[in-house]
Image 1 (spheres, rainbow, N blue to C red):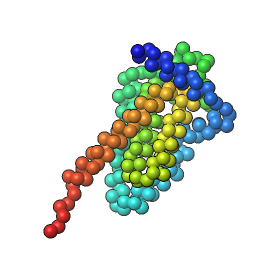
Image 2 (cartoon, rainbow, N blue to C red):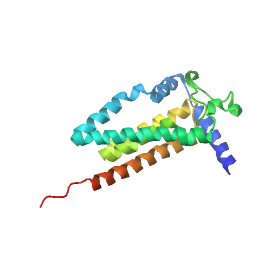
Image 3 (tube, rainbow, N blue to C red):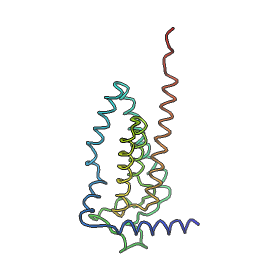
Length: 191
């Protein structure tokens, strides 16, 4: 059963990885980078403070914690444990993988840290802002960044899906912890 899932994952990877052009190569490479998204992160921080005042420091701290945990868990509990080769390092796929700009990344790819981190941010922030337009935007953003990793030849679809689930789960756990902390630390109403 596991072998069939891995075979299907490789087939899906080869299909999505084959959909490339010079234009999309540059777009996906930029989307997968760190610096393109700085304005988005600054905008989120700005609206945290606009909406929540001084409480935004705690929200920002929890967001940073969500991303940090998602990143650490994706590397130390998954990549270093499962040691699944990235498609661009997989000997059985040599000559079949389209790698953009010759950048393959580390040896192991399960789970995608990009997907884990992006979904950690997306799930945590959509819970804060609770706006249908923002929710649609931030989920699309996380999906596109995650897909870019397949396009670039560095992750299988399962790497991305499991990374997204991991990041979402981390954020949901922190949202629950944040709510519990707020409930326990609320001041009693004055009588």
